[in-house]
Every structure is written in structure tokens, then in C-alpha cells.
Image (tube, rainbow, N blue to C red):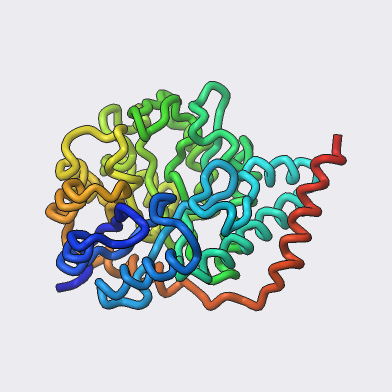
Length: 341
């Protein structure tokens, strides 16, 4: 049997017997780690190895959300703290070169943490452009509120990850910045006009459309589809993500267990594929839901398989790296914020 078009989470720091059986039988394309899966470096490395052995693929993608700021699955005491995305935006406003350098360095340091564990994909960068009044779920995770600045910092983050042997995932395409609700709990509806969305939110993703992977936004854009969020809207996927933004890489859903989506987990999974996503993401490690996802997920084939293979082939070996010097340089750059007033 070929690999199946889903990415799954697991419940803890070690695999249970039923999880081993499920993974061996269902052959997910990839895996995603959360804080509940993380204790210490040796344990994480062992878990990653276990996951890959069960699908018989030493290069099976293992993902994590390691942004810095509020979204860090790896943290003290075993891993350092990194700044949120907005810090790079503030530096960029002082001197664009400083902001870009800091963004690249932070991502390069994160990549060094991840590659040592066997993690090969980071769900970063964000190209979301927040607006006043939006829900704080994005907030200081964003690089700024101006399209060119967001895209430039997103590219610097991408460069840092790729230099460290880590594949990036562009999120949350076609834009989460205007969402007035946290999609973990509720479905946001954005009523902004088509022309404004194309000029701002969607435009920030266009310069990053060459990235190997992207993650959808569970957000309704009523100017295009008043019923379905982008994740389950064929119109949004075909006309905006693929055509207008120009993204041709592997398109994965955001987590189908989030309450922004309606229906059972099985119904949500079917809707993700019907809309044109290549891979469905399920994160919470709950076995009953994992079985529903697997039951509705096809084997990777055709164009989706081509995109998946192309994405994995884009990963390069880590470049030579002086970690201590890079951290000192990053800290010095961030220190400029304290002297810029």
C-alpha cells in the first residue's frame, strides 16, 4: 500500500500499542509534534525514529509549529526561547536590513534545534496581515501590517529554515489576518471586498508562492464563497490559492479537529479533499478521530503525489553553522530595539 494523504498527531511522549498498529496499518504521509509529545531531546529523537520506522521511510516528514513567541512547541529548559514575528517587524521599521537579518538568524537557529531531533518541517513562515479589530490569535505572530514588509520577512525566515535543512510551510493561505475569531473555537467570516483582499491579504502570499508547502486558513471570505472556509472551498483553492496567488506546491489543510469546521471529522476530511487540498492535517492525537480521518483519506497519487515528492525533494542538507555566533548576533540585533526609542 502507498502512503496516505494525511498528517497525524499522536497522544504522548511515547507511542501506545494502538497508535503503533494504526500508523503501521494506515501509513500516513507525515506526522506533527506538539508540546504533549516533548520532554527532552533524546525522547523526541526516539519518538521521531519510531514514527518513521512504522511507515518504513527514514525521510517521512515530521512537522512542528516552532515560530517563536507564543507558538513554540520546544522550550526551556532544553531549548531556547525565540522572539515572536512582530519583533522582526519592529527591527525592520528601524532598518529593513536589520529586520531581515534577525528573521533569518532566528529561523536558522530554530532549524538547528529541529534538525538535531530529526524534525524536518517547520510550519513557518506566516504571511498573515493583521488589521485593527482582528482576533489576537495571530497578533504578534505576524511580521507586520504592510504587504511588502510581511513578504520580505517571510522570505528571510524561509531562507534561514532552508539553510538549516528544514522545509517551510507557508501559512495561513490565503490569509488569516482579518479573522475576527480564533479558528480553534469558531468560524470567522471576513466580509472585505474582493479588490481589497487581493490588494492586501492575498498579495502578501504571492511573493512566497514558490514555497514547497502551504497550510490553509479556516476562514470564510464572503466575497468569494459565503458558506465554506478557504480550507473546504473549491473556489478559494482553485481561483485564489492556485490561480491568483500562484501557489503550486503541496497544499495541506489546517487542523481538521478545530471547531471552525462543521460536521463530523469524517465529513470535514471529505470536504478538504473535495475542495482540492492535497493532504489533510489532524493534530490532537485522539484515536477515534484519527480513524475517521484515515477512513476518508485516499492514497497519495497523481498531482498530489507529485507535489508531495517535489516538496520533499526541495530539502537541502544543513549548511555549516556557528550556533554561538548566530545567537550572539541575533541577541545584539534584538538589543537594538531597546536603544531605538
